[in-house]
Image (cartoon, rainbow, N blue to C red; front, side, top):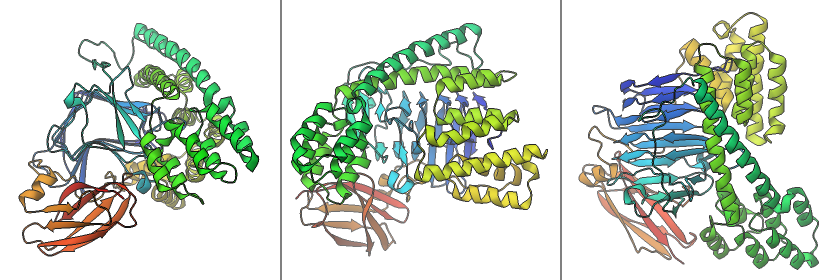
Length: 605
């Protein structure tokens, strides 16, 4: 736990965690390493997690093994759960077996500026899990998502998936589509049960080398030669990144987003053909904000002209935020156009190629910088000046907050507040993010008061304790994580942190039987006819022995709940009125007595 008052880290190597509700649980403790450890995940208060992180970045979670503890009760079991890492990170070469959710992602797990830079999963092995990779639903959790490209055309993700019994190989409930790169000839490494994930086939290789073992001599505290090598890797890839980004920026909106937006906003009805030609000329490099501005200009751009412009920019269509905007604006696009645009989402363009290049260079230089930063923090004495230099080199709001913590640890609150007050303008913090920043400033002010009065967090007065409790209960960001750290470390007030999943669909029993299989054993069944459906669909259900109530939940492709149908009696039928339901694929799950069964129904008009 970290209250934000000092830059800290820790390392775990070759440890055994047996029947722990949390093997490793860390909050705001960046640059941690957990390597070559075994986790037999236990249970407490409704869940168990091998590694749980909140507001943590720069980590190395590699070559660990995660299994459900054999004697654990029927419940949810998680391998690695990551919340709000907000930067370039990876989970690498771990093994997960017999878990509910092997890898669980929630919150902002991408660079705040580019969705193609963020959390990536490479070389992990999965077996007997309910879900191998699960990204929480953003409409429930406000923000959710990981790096939009998992791998690229030159580097496959190289994860393996549960061969039988899985409900989800890769469920993506995030704000935008994930492109998953895999070798079509490697069936065990190609996910089959996916949601909001587009498979991208390439025969590129990824040999999955060990970073800290298997012949590698990399140390947590780098030797002089290792540090020189890491610095060179950083510089080479940073140079390539900056060169590619300069080219990318010159193409985006013709190199001037503000000017293009002004052209759209000041255009007149007679300018339709000229504006259409201008925007198509800048395609496929139009930004999200320019496309939204064009969508609002209904007095100039006809629906057909707008469709042409949107279709020429498939990269942005993979964002649910844009599709939702087009569906819900004052004059929404027709359903058939929306359906066509969804089919075009994620097409490969020159813009895609540039984004992939940038992400690859960013990933490589970030790994090198993280290696150096971990070395500094794990050394006998932390050199704060060198630490700040490398955090500044790495960049991003998570690095800036670590720089602020280093100033706080030295009692240098002038520089701490100067940088903290710049964050809203540097990272365009608005709405909820702006509110979270105010909580962050409150925590920083508390540290200043304690420092000036010669006190620490063990000596809070009643008013300060109340303020901390308020922030812990209301902040979903870094300030809330810091406040919870104080409550738990100082006041023994435990804060429940079960990853937030609905229902019992992922429950694992002591024998790790998949819930769908377990439900079938006890008599749970559901079928839907006709499928595809047009005006209506009828669910034929059977409930488990001695059970007479349950529910059928229907979701759309974004994971949003469309309808919940209550059922009763040992057997029966329930009619679903689909006359006002848009064409598409829907997921239905029947839940009863802790058992579940899931299927898909297609609505076709």
